Image 1 (cartoon, rainbow over the protein chains, first blue to last red):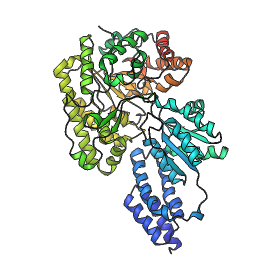
Image 2: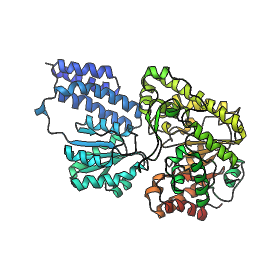
Image 3: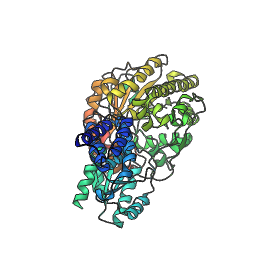
Image 4: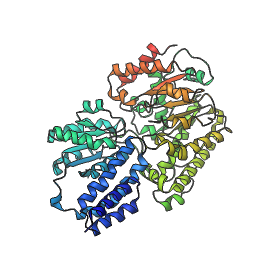
Length: 217
Length: 348
């Protein structure tokens, strides 16, 4: 069983390895955490997720850009895949769920993928519909999974036109579901016009925006 | 035919009576004339005449008259593309990238400069232009954008940090392919009859840092313009798409192949800022395309007026246009608001 000091060392190591996008290190430390009895949830939230918070801050300060975020995400997921099977079910509350997808007709998914990382790191259950998602599928998946939030991304001015229809379908199914939108042609005014509950300018803001929306529900 | 009297005057370094208006449109012009958005990519005849007709309708200058990109890394190097079909698809997309592994990158071959990808369509369009007294458009992406399009931007971004030699190889292949196709254009039309309009969206700071721009994009802009000196083309335009403010200090160090050239900016860059970095060139832009599509007519009119007030102060000249492609689904009356505002407030 790891000592308090050793646990702190592993957690800090996981944090630093995510920030430094050192995938080999996150993998090694994830195995070390398991082997030495560090609680998997602790390792994820106070190691990996904390690292991703730091990454988000670096992105907000324009020290990190998309290439760094992508590699940080790879480092995080490599360790997450090792730690997740060791989660003690009773150690966590029912996670909040979010549906994520890029609208029909649009395949630009880098932004959505970065948003996915942020929600994964924050402990949400992410149902990733990927890209070019038929408009009715968002509401269908929300109904199937009971997700509290639906996140819709669009990079093209043509694909953003699908958003109001998707939002209406989701709200018609359950008016309590919150809808978060994002993408290059979107802004907060357009989001409000479309009937969305929230808007995130970038991946770093998405989790906070979703948490605010859910708290207001 | 000279459908660009004011833009041609600016290119000669002359003053004009009113800010020129350019539509920056492919998909919209095709829909406007009863065709599909896909025609903008695979039907040069329909696309060419749609461009002429829509320009006449809205009073647009025609140069640079754009078709689809002449070169597209993902298509030219052997990937698969999907033409826009559904109501939400506004552009051609790459459905399979040609090189996504290290082995595939090293095994890439230079494409045939006459038959690869959409080059035959682009050549047909260019021939229509020249036959109607217009300059032939050569519409490449920057080497960085083309290279990222060969493997996918996400993969390219990762390789920049982890395996830069793969990126360098893709960049080199992209540069050589660009000049191979350009030579085809020069051999067909003569350099003096060619307008080059290059776009660089993947270089925006929404994706890469200025340092990454300096290392991976800038050297190829420098090389491009150095090599362009042997081609006395009619005009050169650079569309620096998206948030590129942090790149401007680097990009402005490039010894551009000619002056004035046209520097096309997105809504994220202020016209005065661009003019400060490119004091010898014409600034082009830059109403937010989303406003044209989703705003009220009054919003489009007011935004156009506000931009004109800034652009008219630029001594080397200003061309009003959308900051990126005019959205294909823009309400026609909104599009008209740009014309109306330019006619009301665009005079010197």
